[in-house]
Image (tube, helix red, strand yellow):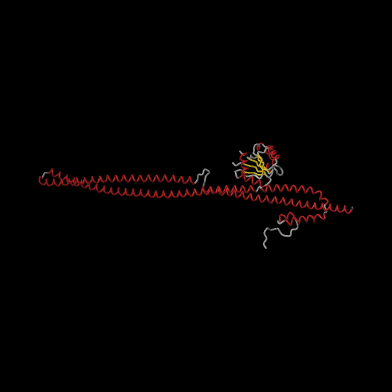
Length: 324
Length: 121
């Protein structure tokens, strides 16, 4: 009977010691779980911060590209600039056309002056003819005069002769002057026409060139706008993807809450078991605790776990990199 | 001027996720890790929206809502409870405290924004 009681007492102490060891292990497991929860949260926060940064940079990149294209909120930008250049070019071309018309009219006016000069030439020719006819009359008179010897007739002959010479001289001078003017006017008309045609050709060439450049500019701008629109769409898609990735990280909150609930239960169990530890045999407690710790340690592979277990760890965990 | 939202959760990552979602639609956000912190951060600043967790240390979401509703500034501010809690009694408690709405975690971005658009004028 005494032996039975002693055995029972011994078993009771053994049980209490085992319970006390389990309470120590439960504390360690609680610390492990809390550490896991913290680790997961820290990692998730890092990931979310990275995602937020990516999202922001995508937005910034798009903003910078939009600024570079000077795209306003109303969609106006280079489009408006090209349109203004086209309008200015149209105005310039109209002015050149107007100058060409003016030059053409000037050339026609000069031609008309030329025609009138022709008339002047014919008048001067008639004047010369009249002078020559008068000379003939004067000569005839001189022959008559030598026969009649009349003084009055003599004076008349002289006057007619002088007039005939003057008329011929004046006609010749007018003809010379008009001929010179005609040449000058003709040359001017030629130059005006030539210049007008040159200007028109140069203007047409410039117009083609400017229109080509504007078309290329418009095309380039349209391509850039298209690229920007695509980039905006991709940025939005990227943001959505990031958003979804971030949202999927909510698993951590659920995991942590579940761990917290487990921790609460473990702590309650430890508290429940605490009264039984008072009768634990201190001599055996360490060996039983070490046994459990060793079992947990055998399953552990990471320094973080071993730190929590606090068993005698022979290998070094100071560095995550080691060269041999 | 941007709208301001107060995001309250004891989980840093959850605060970050909710803030990220709200910022994507133009909100400026301020954060608190529990009811006490939230009250301190809010002060008496005008807020367009409050999104709070239910179970938090120091001061829970229900108490926070009561405290906010007691202030004239936040009498009509939309307050959403975002929680993993799904018990109907808790939901009723939140409603009685003055919550504008109740959303269960994990939340969906579109759902959250739809609710936000409904409650924020």
